[in-house]
Length: 437
Image (cartoon, rainbow, N blue to C red):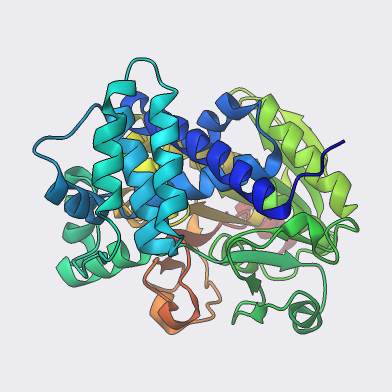
């Protein structure tokens, strides 16, 4: 049997991954399909090939405006989207990753030649991509968000902060881990860094399954910002806690690791399967419920509820550069109605004096700050004093706002809003007090 050299294996990985990345870009840009769903179209590829294809597609999406600015210099008019995407991939490899141009160019030409519909553009691809040699990606303003999202952020935070958020989106984010114990020791084992909130940060591209502690379930992947809402609850040991809208399970595991008696509820059965897998790997326990929270009723009230509500997910663009291409508009009315309904349902399931954390991975205040203002005006909940690691996050006594431009020297964080609310304690029975007197 002929042996495959390391160089040949790397070449094959690159060629297959480039074609996979082109498939993913087409799904995102032309069909408004999220990368996580488009990956299903790469079922014929190996895990390393899928990982490389996804990484390449994400890189292009983060820097598409700048890449197109370079490529447009060498084209009288843009070719069909499939061909344009192949050129974008080649430009990203050469100008951003510093890959040898001959390999990237040959790979691009090969992909187009195999596409019967677009094979006639192979000469154009060869000519354009060869001109990338010696070029540099211009230092320009960060890629702007879609008009609707950008307008909402400017209205909330101003131009300077919005541009800082866009700049954070242009960078490939590191990977954050929540560890069961001793973050400092785990950071040393994983060659990572301990963040101020106790998360452990490792570099992007790290093969997580090969790291110490993965098989034993000593940690799980969770953005540092996503790990903050649970900390607002303080000591949950022994408490009966509901994780509402629980998938994919990061907060469920946080609660279980802290000793809570957790019920994890979500409407999506397939996503709850992932929660179950994560719990099994980390050897943590939680009661699993697949149900629509608007129709479900618990057997008994909860001491504490964590509601990580469905939202626009605009706070996660840093990790999901495909989102602005798939959801460029902000149709928030259905989400706002659902969020309000879930808050009121959750309030009804709390014991008197019980605590509720409401959180959303959104940067849009109407889903966060304004949603809580409206909830408080309905009188079913009252504000509670929320602990906060950093004064810059604090909005008022009960809520905090996290943004992608925070912690710039540490690699940033996702955007989140979180608020700590409390169900009023049961009022004393006046007649009973009178009789006692």
